[in-house]
Image 1 (tube, rainbow, N blue to C red):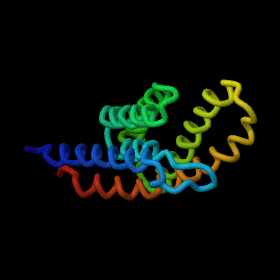
Image 2 (image 1 turned 90 degrees about the horizontal axis):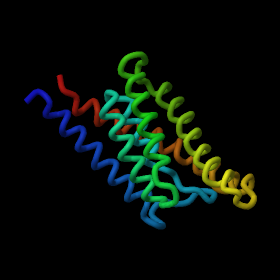
Image 3 (image 1 turned 60 degrees about the vertical axis):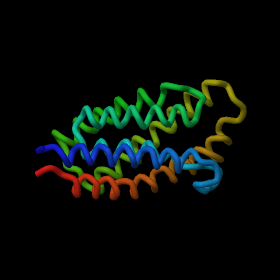
Length: 169
């Protein structure tokens, strides 16, 4: 009976992830800004990891990674492995060593989102030998990084509200 709000909170996170996946994957639902659409599931997984312990954070990271990999179809496994590992580490860091604040969350969101998107570009576009990688990065990936970061700020406040309102005392 003690953990009833934990179950409700985890269920709410799952509903949020599914809604963000639908929002991200439905054509013409999210507007493209300068040729890029946001990857909403990256900041969703990161912001959940700020508030939850290691194992739940890792499982939410893996579920967001699976949906990202299946949603973009090319390379199954990249986002699953990366988000699972990153969310586990973030859950560990923020539960034991750091305080969750807007500034910390924004800094980690910016660094990790940028790093993951750039690594994806590096592995699956640049190393694949596709044409004009610099131009393609400027035309599509810079706007995607910025758009993902800005959506991460909104998701931080949503997940902070979910966590605080459904906290077990």
